[in-house]
Image (cartoon, rainbow, N blue to C red; front, side, top):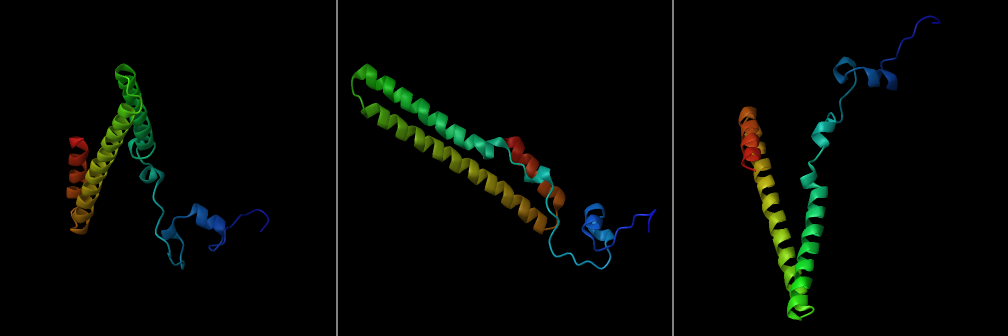
Length: 130
């Protein structure tokens, strides 16, 4: 025992270094966790939406303030331009979300049909259309 190191099959250290298939007698209760690359989202899907909304609203508010200054109607154009910008931002969010869900549904249906190459092709076609 002194010169050798042996890991027990049920030890946590063995589970850390061995693949799940190499561990005899253990029941696999949970699916394998996704890789880190599968968990990452593009910035346009997370932080980008918030920045888009904030910048567009500030720009349209500034345009409204400028028009109000020119025409002497203090709150009118600021309100109209801000509402117009908000409607545009949310319409863009809606259409980009719908496109993303359509792509996801096409991939899911192709995978259910057992055609993984068609799912990959549909994903590539949808990304190329952007």
